[in-house]
Structure formats: structure tokens, C-alpha cells
Image 1 (cartoon, rainbow, N blue to C red):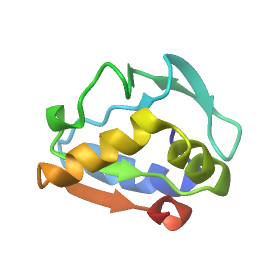
Image 2 (tube, rainbow, N blue to C red):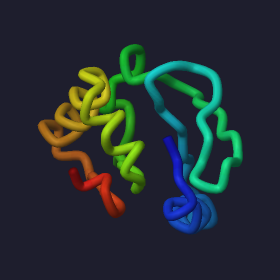
Image 3 (spheres, rainbow, N blue to C red):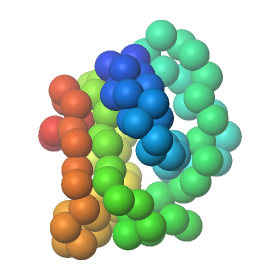
Amino acid sequence: MLFSTTKPIREALEQAGAQCKIVGPRLGTVASASKRQIDVEMTFSNTPSVMFDAVLVPAGADSAATMSATGDAVHFVLEAYKHCKAICTVGEGAR
């Protein structure tokens, strides 16, 4: 799940040479806050967060509510925390 407030962060990371992947509850697409369709490349259930150097939890009340109610998403972030990965939360994503 990626929202318009995270787009500048993603662009800056990619310009610095980082690779960004979209992880979501299912493969397919998700809509950004601006209604742009974004491809989900991996799912929470089949991709452990330890495969990444960092995790970004996007803003958006709908996104925060969905992620906090999705056990695999909660596990993904908690696993990243337990493995001392960098975690960035934006806006409501801090919930």
C-alpha cells in the first residue's frame, strides 16, 4: 500500500540507489490516495520482512485501519522491529 505522501520518499530513495518493493495483502494492484493504480509485487504472507533493510508504513486512515486489522501485515512490521530493521511510519501509519 503506497499513498501520495510516500511518493517523494520513494523517489528520493530510488535516486539514492535503493530498490523499493510494494508489499501488500495480496498480489495485484492497490489504489493510491490520488487513485493511481500501484502494482503489489509481494505479499505479507509469502515475503518475510527480514528480506528487506527497512520498512515504510504509509499514511492514510484507510491504509492504517486495513493494515492493523490484517494479521500478516502486523506480523510483517513486528518481525522487522524484532530484527532491528529501520521502520518509517508516515502519518496515520504510526498507528
